[in-house]
Length: 294
Ligand SMILES: [Zn+2]
Image: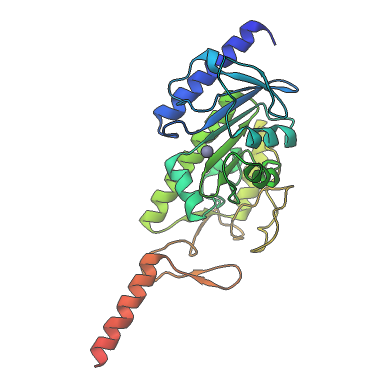
């Protein structure tokens, strides 16, 4: 890579950091960014800096085991570099990694709700599903190990009780995926607050997947033919998207999410799920009925 190209990448990382901070995707010194500059060399944001106030000279150069090759005096690569290294090792096609804590996506990660429902055509064609990697202590091998099975088939994932991770062929590609994760989380939250989600049918999901090929959208893995049963191990070869079978239909009213009062959720294993509001309403109703009987 030429010196000019490297200087441009340093400036681009500063710009992406500024956008993450400006959009509220990070607070304080949260988040980290890396770019592959050679098969075994990365340009990585340093630890302990706000991503909104970086300068190009701050970046660290590391090898693919995280060892510091070059950097400004006193600067160390991000403490989350282990998670980035896993992404580069598992996915030779990945050229950049962006990690942040956008509030809405992280809210889903805290609630344990994956963004894996067939809701937005755009998300199905670009990201597929956004699963949640199990919780691992930040900056440790545990977190890196928890994301490893997911990065094989996904460009975007949530990190349980932590944040989100986006992988891209290049820096802005990874950054835009982080934007899409947060935008999808925002839309999903609004739909659920409004009380219902119409889901895109499995047939239409298949059609959207075909568009990936038509438009040359690089996806790390195809969408799984059918949702895996509850409790099944992660299938590293495909993306699990929840889409109901409804031949001839494109959109299907969903009964398995929050719903209005009285609308109950029946999971694929037959369990009934209630939101807190629904549970409260049921208890109130039972108490009312008891009161009218006495
Ligand atoms: Zn983090």
